[in-house]
Length: 415
Image 1 (tube, rainbow, N blue to C red):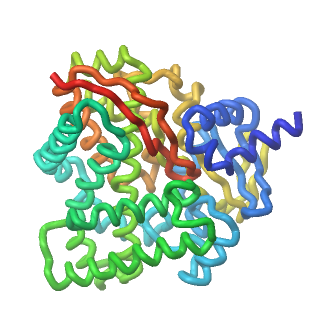
Image 2 (image 1 turned 180 degrees about the vertical axis):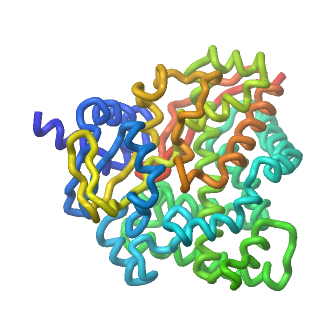
């Protein structure tokens, strides 16, 4: 039993297991029921606790003073943490919104908070619809077979977020490559290399690119989000350059990678649950609820790390002040203690309780944009396509932080 326990809990550090929805959820089902609070001490990582139940993930997420983002926000090897500390002065590296604590987090989040509210995001609908039709047109032109991930899902939200932040289409592939190297660095097909320093190179490439964008928008302001960030005022002074560039990086990467994963994972869910596909096809008004269920189902952001500012107890386990813990969103979103029949994909589900966007003060700033993109895409696709099916076995990105499909060949016919 002890050997099994040790094997199952340390699997949380295996990118191949954590990237694949089947193996990941089998592990989470085991941990939630048997070991909802696990201490991991691995030679390559600083020790941390693993929390997998919905109530615990929610509690940590809503108590931002008790569980802080610094000094560790995601699970990375000790060697890489040391390199980040030397280069940037923090174990998190570039300090984006997901790494910050209050009061700085609240101030910088406020820079774009109004921009990402439902009403301004709703005004993007015509642009998003046009891009959705563009990629469904592409599917139709490909003659009835494509790799939905590579040919559509990766590119559709990428085009939208690049347009929003002012990156020209000619540079989208470069931005996609950098994002895959950042989030999929452990994957043999997506990582830049096997050396720890390769991850640092990715961050520095992002820094160099967006440094130029900031300078351009200061000198040539337009009406895009890049201009808002480049000219932002915080506490009466221009936002610091490192904060600006970090803001760009999280917007550009998380702004499309997670939506890409949900778009492809959402289609796979519809194919795995054909009665839900038929229901959505018959009632397009369910597209908004379907998008939210896809987000719960895929939960592309696998985890976040927090550090305790006081001793705290979960299920009889004492986590001491200064110790770190990882909260796992896919595990929370399949917890039957909080969600009815969680392993069923149900597009009419009430998803107010799902945790894929986080919770509390760090809830995803771009959630309304993500829902709108997914809703519109499936409305367009299902209004034009006659049938669609898998053409080969899907493949998964090997990743512990942001996961999803990296290949899903499909066959289809248009009306």
